[in-house]
Structure formats: C-alpha cells, structure tokens
Image (cartoon, rainbow, N blue to C red; front, side, top):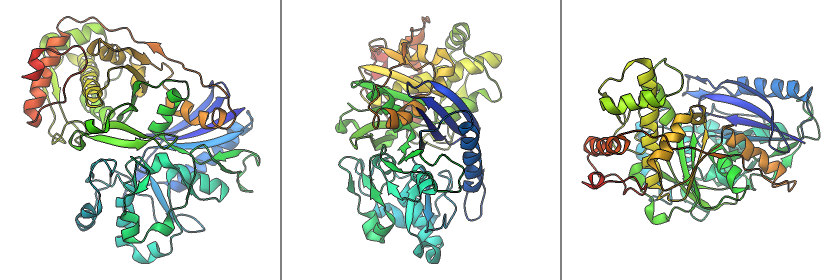
Length: 471
C-alpha cells in the first residue's frame, strides 16, 4: 500500500510517497512561486496541476498508487464553477484593499470565536471571498463553490466538491472552531451556496476522473490542513498531553490541552480544529523567515561553541524582522540586531538561539508543561531542539529526525483512519545543550523584548525562570 501526499507549503511544493508503515519511498519537490497579478498576487494553479499530474504519473510507473491526499497551509482557496477556477487564488501575503478591510472587520466575531486575529494581509478565507465579491461581482455570481486548496485538488481529480473541518478551522473566519458553528459571515453576505458538504478529512471522495493519466482505482481523500496533519501524526500514535512545534516558513505551535482562558489574540494565538473537529489552541510566528533575515545567504548548523560566543558577546535579536507581529504584538518590521555576532557561524548561531527563545515564548503562551515535539524544517539543525530542551528543563523535548510529520500525518488518514493500520511514533529525545550563562541571557533578552514591545510577556512555565523575568 502506498499513499501520495501533496504538501503545499508557502515556499515549496512536495509530493511524498509513503508506504503503509510510514516509510518514505520517494519525494519530489519544486518551488511554490506566486505570480504578481493582475488582479492580485496568486498561486499558479495551471503550473501546479501540470507538475502534479506528471509527477504522479512518473511515480506510478515505479510504485502502485493506492491513495492520494493533499495538505496545505491554512490560507489558500479557489473560487470555481463547474468547469474550473473563476478567479486566481489569492496569495495570503497580498494586501487587503482598504475598502474591503473596513467592510470586513465589523463582520468578524470576537476572538477566539473567529479563530485568529484579523490580518492586514489576505490570510482568511472570508476575507478573500469578500475581495473577490467586491472586485468581480459578476464573476463571483457565477461561482458554484469556494474550495480550500486540499479540497480543490480533490475536486479537480474526482469532480466531487467537499469541505472538511481542519481547513475551515484554520483561521478561515467562516467557522467558529470552538464548536464548529458558523461565524455568521457567510449568512450575512449570502455565501452559503458556495460551501459544499462537510466530510471528515479522511473521507474517500472518489477516484480520478478519466483522462488524467492516474490509476483509476486510486482513492482520493478530502485532504487536510498541513499543521493539523502534523499534529495527527502524533495523536494517531497515542500522544495526548503534548505541545507540537511544527517548523518551516512558520513556527506553528499547537497544544490540545491549552485552556481556552489562556488564549490571547494580541500574541498571535489561534484556535484550529483537529482531525475529529475538536478545538486546538496554538500560536503562529514567522520564524523561518526571521531565520533567513538574520543569516542572509549563510547556511549550515549552529555549533555549541558559536552559540556560547553569541551569549558571551550578548548579541541579541529583537522581533520582528518580517512584516508580521506573530507572538510579539506591534513588532512587525521593527526588529533589529543588538551587537553584531562573529562572522557567518555567529549569524547561524544567533538565528538558531533567537528562534529557540521564540519557541520558548510560544510554549509559555500555550501553558505547555508536558512533552514537546519538534517537527519540520528546524530539525535539520540539532542545535535548535537542544536549545529548546535547555530552555525547558522540566519538560521532555522530542524530535522527529525525519522531519516529515505533515506527510506522515496526512498519509495516516488513509492507512490509519481508513485501513486501521497502527501509527508509528518515530521520535527521539533531544539532549539539552550545556551553555554557561544561558539562563542569564534568556532573562536579559526577555527584558529587552518587553521594553521593545512595551508590554509584559506571558508568565514563564519553563522551569528556567528567574526573578529577573518577572521584573
């Protein structure tokens, strides 16, 4: 049994082919380049489709393709009629026109019922729909469905339109993820007819249409939000009391046990829906982009010696180096380096240490005190997990060294949810790095961040807190 997973990230597209035991059999990738418009910055659906079909056909010559499932970030959707896309799908980094933003904000219910703070860029499905409706009313009137990208590809392959709770629960602002009810925006603006039937993400929606060059008996599943697929990888294996740090362009924190009372919209916190529609608290910050902003063209792994040198020099990064507040309210575009690190190795070490400190804040926001699982791109440098482990001495920090939890979790929708196969837990503990002065550096950095954003940070629950943290 093999499952093909289309992983649609902000930066890259990947197709993973996994065996029924979760073994990675093959992988293909290409950049996910957006086009500048008109009418807005958008994803190149035609190019993605050509690559997807050609890649699946190529893999199908070597392997039997039993199932296909797509996973995507939470902000990509397509307006379609019975033939195909009516308008280009909006890139979530496209600005929202001021008139649309002014009309949209009063429609949104309070946090956490709206799932996430309203973004200035087009990160919410409801926001995107309003942009399309106001910009192209005649075209919009012909629409049959609005489909998140995983469900778009399921529809494109099978002809059946469905929705599922994880993409709707991922800051769409169409659905309240606390209970699955409507936020009322679709009803107020007359969009109900665009919302297809709701099915579980593991629902088999059909088989490929003739003429696509795909196996006629390949099961096409409804699809899933990428970070929720990552979470599912560990939930299916039996983990319950844990926090997930899913890393890449974004650092996405998710913790099923975070109390609703802990949610704070000002610090980039969110509520999403897991595979079974249950609410999951989280936090979003653009850590991968900030890492790149610090390191520039430098690449490599951080050494303990280089991190120690950063601490000794007291080189610091203050958020945010990108145009997004994330976990630090009011920081977007205001970040800076304080104290230049020593050379390329110092830049890599500083970026890694900074992101570990940001992860520490995210875990505090989620009130995490049990196990921590690290997955995704940051696992390529073991120092990141070792620093998180050193900053959270009271918690067990586990790492998926394969870094493929999203693909594995998506594949489990077929093998585990449909076929009943057991889910394998493939993690190992991260050994805390021993660095003289780390606790003091952390306290100084937190004080500097508090001054920078001019508000208190969340209470520390790491076990490494000092009285200086609370000054």
